[in-house]
Length: 297
Image (cartoon, rainbow, N blue to C red; front, side, top):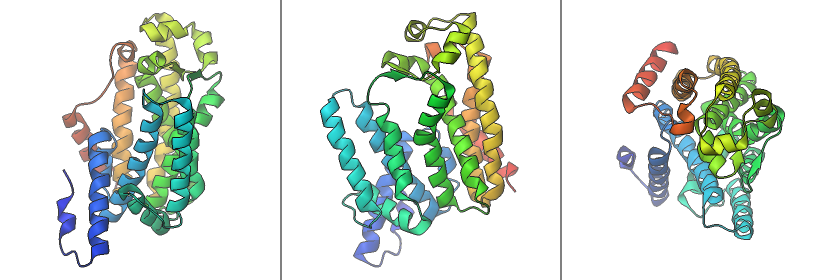
């Protein structure tokens, strides 16, 4: 489960500690990142472990909000503690394996504290059940929970033009919109209605319909509309690979390609997200990774 080859030739206690911390982050990512992990394995070791730590941190923050037993007051305390954890991390002060690895990544790759704090801002928006009135409101949410992660990833990858940061934002927003379509019923059952009200009203789709998993012609047209939006963002955002090193480009194409595959299945059958969580098989994901290696040269 762990990347045990990293234990070879350990010379000092500090090196041994970082190997254990990297292994911890790797284990979390392999267990939880069902889609992203397939892209991460394309990266060189230093970048890969930095990404693992970033993913593990994001997972921890997300789990705080999704904990069904948490109270509003207790969650506020926990998120405040996470903000302090970030502040200490960027100063090289850590007390757990995730922040051990992440603090090194912050120093090595110049990750701003504002982007790590922005991720907490986005996740905090999920504390209370809510819905989004307009696309611009939803886009703002997507920018915090996904686009800011894309920017941090690009900093870790390295880039040849600052335009890569903006393109990473576009791609991140696209992938988050695909998440919204994929998880629409599950989110609705928790009181989270992400699809913009202006779009739902345009096509005659109600909140109750999403909670009950009831499809009609309006739902299918709404899915087609949002899928086209996601596809447009995807096409523009994927241009980021032109400004990244080869292996980072493979990583991005792999992760994005898996999400595009999910979007394709949703577009082919708009009722599926109302019945089940749409996903790709391990074999299909491996095929996307192989094609990504062939595509980025």
